Length: 320
Image (cartoon, rainbow, N blue to C red; front, side, top):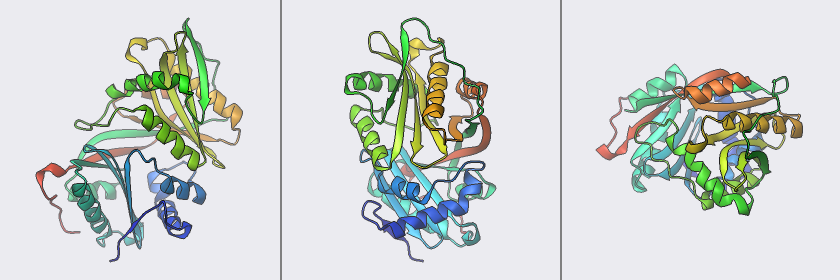
């Protein structure tokens, strides 16, 4: 079979549309109940990845693989094969390409996720070990009850669009360390965010015509007690909640609820076309899941992350 490595930055729209077609074929398995990304959104997503991490793509008739490498033990794989073409070795062949690249660039552990019986079986055959269950939840935004949030004295809510103001960039980078103790699989070493990574993400989102909406609880001295980020693509009816965090010293004050509710209220006011907001949380993160459920999010599906340890030589796989 022919497997083509694709440079999304220079590939034609016609090539990137093939990734859209694969996403469409697998959509109901992977994102039940969720509006699908448009063709333009998918093209922009693959073409304009942040330059602060390594991104690689492979394409074959009926299948694709996407690799994102943030560090030796923070490499992530998306692998899709059309349902009617499964059990023919496409997934194995694509994975072989990914693993060869991972070893070339020093990746020590590769992680993906599965949400179906077939995906779980493929992961086992490849030698991957299940790690963490991640709950994907959806909020029906239009009828959601979102009362005006309350804040403790000394804080105010601010929403920044498109980019973090330069005057607050350092404080935001410091606040992002709140994510360092979020539930993660053992051995996952995701680098802490820097100012360069924040700016790189903002630039990538601009190129994708995807609006960044960052709501923070800002202290009087300019420090950030909590933050949450929403993202919205032009023309989409779906909003996506990215990271939400509260710095350790400010926990237990209701700041996470305040920033989440405020962000959703602002989103609904600014973008009445948005119907659904999605978020994902580790199953064991009872605090954040409980908060989201109290706002109105409801579980829609569960993904299970699985890891391949590449430090122990070639990965053994059973024939497919």
